[in-house]
Length: 284
Image (cartoon, rainbow, N blue to C red; front, side, top):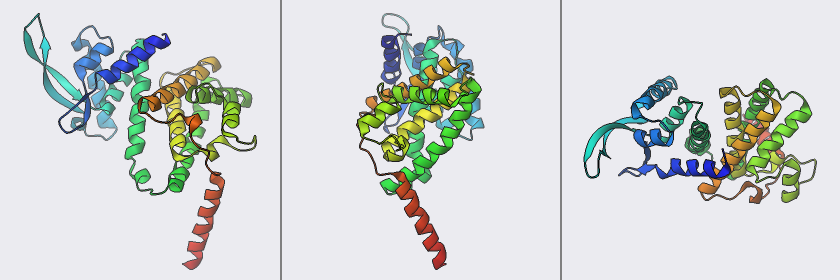
């Protein structure tokens, strides 16, 4: 699928988004079915039912994400009639595209689009994260999350055929290039004035760490979900997800990651935290 067509479809997902009287965003199931290229709404219903089941299995209240509604459709030049539809949350859309026809290219685009957007919402709503009051606390939290998910990403990449250390470095570079507008690890170092010995992730602020966390988690899920095999396909997947995260940041009016300021080494924060913990234990 060409870049232009990809952009067109991603814009459509945003264009059909609606806002209710309380300011909450939602999507109409009938609108979503058309964007996902289902010829008739009835063919779309099985994907909705599978999504509801997945919602319940995840411990979520189905009615919070899938609300039955009636909406007006035009049946002729002037005639209109009410039809059944469903008011969908972003999470509901995410689950639906995971359960829609995987052979449709637009469904694959929707999977990445809603996965990234949903992940953005999740981290913003994480109780543990929102309790953190300082930038340093947020950096430490996200860096720890990044370390855990990089291990899981490496395992998923290995299952896809990325075995050797050099191959994994190339795989990681593809993710960076997607997210950083073509810059690989070496390019990021140069752009940010980092020394070769300095780890990129250790000098990121919370905003940049969050973007990279989205990149890692979504790539891991996509590799597993689509059972992607082969180094080239894995690299392409990592690049595409990184690019999608970048596009999402742009749509939200955020600063591009390569232009975000360099933070002091997180190692200093970790050391200070350890010293504080030791001091607290001694007092007890």
